[in-house]
Length: 115
Image (cartoon, helix red, strand yellow):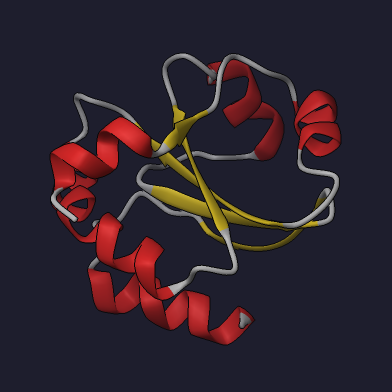
């Protein structure tokens, strides 16, 4: 799958707060991908996201625009992007959150530690 196709089908989270988010993610496995259009490190990892999503099919990937959800980011302590937060049945179980550029290998290593 090409990046343009992936961006068309990847679920994008609308503006929401942390409590509503936990309710929305109450059943299942989710990976929230925090990003922004202006972020060069986010643009660096985006081409790898279709392959990452394909490899980790047990998870539903949701893209979260940092600027659209700035209050949510503050509530969750997302201080840098790109970042990844994993939820199981409405509860956060892991996070890969920092301001550093992330490679495909680093994201996969993080997800392998959870799986």
